[in-house]
Image 1 (cartoon, each protein chain N blue to C red):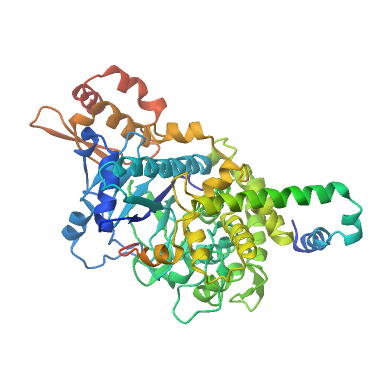
Image 2 (cartoon, one colour):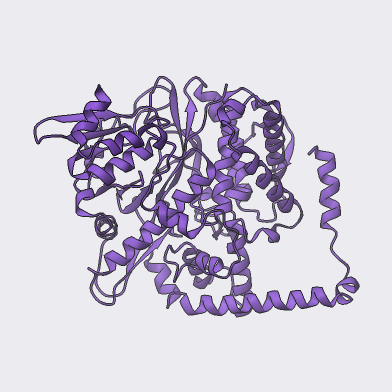
Length: 501
Length: 67
């Protein structure tokens, strides 16, 4: 039987400061996160007890100094009242959404992250020298061969052998770019000079099929094994090959189709062999570099198919599965699987006939349309710096500057969530996961919290005793399960006692 | 939907309307004009917010240490 899904994204934002003075990226990132958090949130540390980014899903552990890794990560860290984590990862501000149970909620808190970065800019701006300006981009590369990640996370049944999981996912990740890509001007792979525009930000950086690395020799399927939940039952699939996406429909499809596919894999309802590619890393780039979508890629069984053809086969498998009713219990009556399938089908149909009709739904189509129109009007070549600037500024999170937000303002983009919901999501957590309990405790008892993490809270009750409250089940700690308890106790000591009772 | 059915649909949908048909359809012409005006307005707006000195700005945008 498939597992109910948990969805989440983590986004490393690109940052720079223009104008006088020389402000290092690390300093800007620290300013953004530091200025956003109120004092009582700033003093709650991240609890590293259950963290180990070097544990490999294939069953071994990579050698590296774990303490050093913790120190790096601990620089500036916030756990927010919406259940999210907002911190400095190396030179980037990173926002990890709270745990959500469906793709639409994932879109909502992903968007709340953008709004939080925008609010951070405004606060950081106040302490910068006059004339200096902070820019924050939700994209994945600087155009010079340096990439930064947008990772997706999905809760997966530990019982699925990792090798089967990886084999099933690789062809899917190679082909989902046709709707999940954010679009990019040019190519950053050395020696590749004949690409004007490609579907994906990340394709240039994919170098291996499967692996633990995230900063070099990046793999299509990442093996990091940190479940942030009961390790006997769950794994957390950490997807690193995807793009940061601005269009709500694009993000919805990216996480929604992947979530559905994972349920088929868990239920052994996908014929893995019929999708296996002959050369996946090469295919990833071929698909990305052909916006006409006509390129065929070779399968291990000798067939050649377009990415769209393969996606239709995945969609057919998912539809058959939904009809069978085998996933109904895990879906719990939610309509998200049908909503994803309907959007998936309509988007594939348009991609087959006339992709330009999708400029209000897919990032790469929207960005390409802008670039084309701007190019024609100003008679520019694809290599003109203005083309790269439009590409970059499409991802600016400041609604006054960001070109995606200009499309939103012109009502050219389909919305799935409202501005009011996004604003609320900056403060309040989803109500149906443990993020509710985490966020609510931050809102109510921040001054008594010493540390927090995905799966635990550590309270300092009387200045002497530390109490660790584990939250190993992501589905527990919901509003339905904990609200009355939280409202009963104004002081955390009563709450902790009740929980341990 | 099955592959064969989809290919048929693809063909049918992809058939472009003939030029005469477009010329004979003032509504479509009007719509085309409106779309172009909209896009022109959008491009004007983009020009007004695009960072100055594109070449310099792009050159200075360097991001190290990402995952």
